[in-house]
Length: 235
Image 1 (spheres, rainbow, N blue to C red):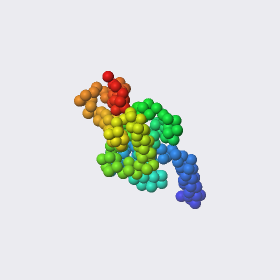
Image 2 (cartoon, one colour):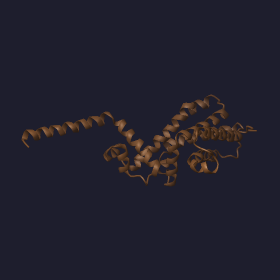
Image 3 (cartoon, rainbow, N blue to C red):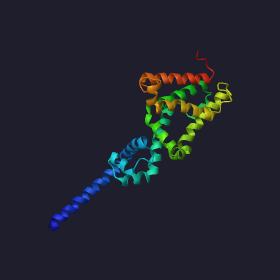
Image 4 (tube, helix red, strand yellow):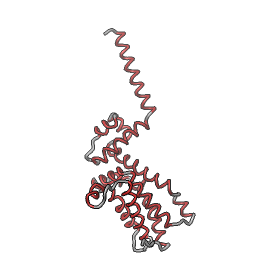
């Protein structure tokens, strides 16, 4: 190979490297989104301990270096996945409700707000089945992501529910013996169990439990249950 050929090859490599850098600078959000989307699928399928970084890289068609660049390590990526899913759920609540401060100022219809909150949660679980898989895996593996997101994400949402339930108790809608925290857990369990165990319910109780009609019926039953808690007759 002549010196001229070597020089051309060197310039070609430099141009390609420069082009790659430009692409990375221009599309950081696209790269990050691609990693998150692939990681969500992998972690939902096999949890944190059952998923390898290489598997996520292959699915995202991206280098391992980019994962470390954006998320530092596997733990950082795992928590980012859960944050992404939780923020999607919170956004759905934000579309339906005013801020907590506005609610405090407006003397709101607590009964309607509570039923809307229950309905929104059920609809969120129905449309985000992957969210439930991630929660189940995280709980089984020690709750690393859920614990890390308490202050930033989960806690504020929990405290809004708790505040609404306490208002319900002050107004006489909800029996005072029902502890708000336990009531929230009962609601989460009643909603999430149906979707997390739908495959087993198909054989035992329901036909096509994840079909639109079955989900609509389950939504109706959850709302009837909570209306009863709020003292409304369901006869």
